[in-house]
Image (cartoon, rainbow, N blue to C red; front, side, top):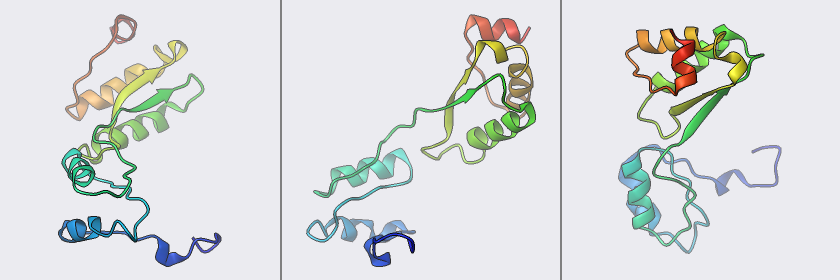
Amino acid sequence: MASTAVPNAAIQLVTTRDVIDSLLECDKHIDLVIPRGSNELVRHIKANTRIPVLGHADGLCSIYIHPDADIDSSVRILIDSKLGYPAACNSVETLLVHADALNTHLPAIASALLEKGCSLRCDDHSKAALK
């Protein structure tokens, strides 16, 4: 923020939910609300304000694995993004693996996810790479 022309007071971080409803009534003073949180929170905010809301109630977060990606880093990133805080709206839901990475990367990633209790839903090509 310090390197921009935006005053620090122009952005407010709300860390508890008890002040949200009173904040949503300030439509003459607030230009935009960007909620971060659960489906329920985002829906509540959208339904209870006239302030424009930049938010979504559902995820659709994907990770793409390129054949050049480091396998160990890919596993760590996937485990963290899927299981670090699975209730978060930015928790990964879809893993897209380049065809050239199916046999090299997917087995290690799938093994790590299964070891942590994650279930997998795979297409036929991915299933074949895991046999």
